[in-house]
Amino acid sequence: MASVNTQFSIAVHVLAAIANYKTTFTSEVLAGSVNANPVFVKRILVKLSKAKLVTTTVGKSGGYDLARSPESISLFDIYSAVSPPSAFAIHTYEEKKWCVVSSNIKEVMGEVLIGTQNAVENDLKRTTLADVVSKIRSKSR
Image (cartoon, rainbow, N blue to C red; front, side, top):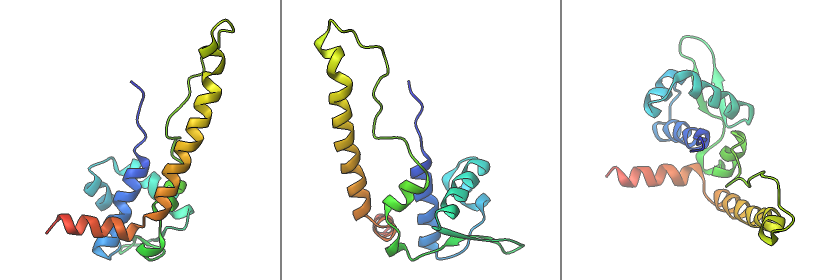
């Protein structure tokens, strides 16, 4: 089975934690919330910092905070920051000229992939971090 890329969901998780609690967190505390390796979470936070979604403060009381309001951060912003894989991949097996399916499937699936990827990205553009935090809060009541 192919490996799964969880960077996007972990990035949303750590940003939602910061937004929900409205405080600065260390990467270790955020990794504890995710229940993931702190080094892995730190790598994601570096990507979020480069995308200007979080700010970093060094020192004893340092950590990560949101660089913008949750209302101004779309899930697409987060998705773009972590460079996730496409919605699906098209196989790279050599085509067989004698088979009409083999000769055309990659082109047809390429078109499907473009449409699927556009649909995913458009939905992520419509959803903000504030929307995610609101849904999380509504489930905890």
